Image (cartoon, rainbow, N blue to C red; front, side, top):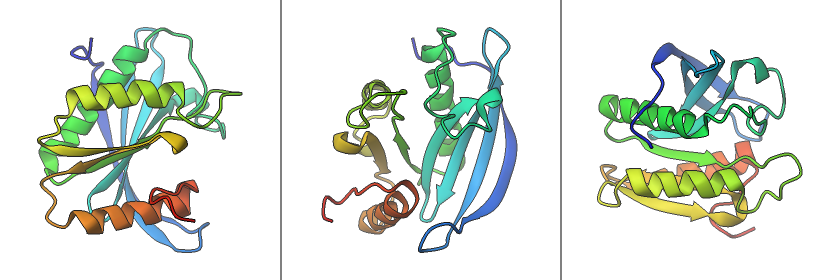
Length: 180
């Protein structure tokens, strides 16, 4: 099921700064694009934060201007190949950066509770199956539908987790450490 990705192309990367938060957080956005069987274009973003944290996001290009772009369904029945393609993009980044760790939020469908969303459950199963625990430590944040895979190649894993906590708190209003 996850061995037939769409052909994708890297569209380059841009340097950005989140300035609408209490802390200015710089990052690089790597953009990839691919077309599904219906010729609809998807955009995949790997937002890279220091140290080697990549937050994975994707949506249909024609949803780009929507504030709900990550929650909208396409009803094209291509979910498995779209997820597969996103995984192959992650693998492509791992070839370039073996220290890469990955995170994502399973966006809630319209009207769905943000706890343990359907997307989160699917993505969690896929990541656990395709990224071995010998290479990554997997963190399931069920109450926030957030998932993080910490690379075991990283020398200071606590620094990565601390940086991830800042990213999730400031940018996504999530609390990964459980205190508050």
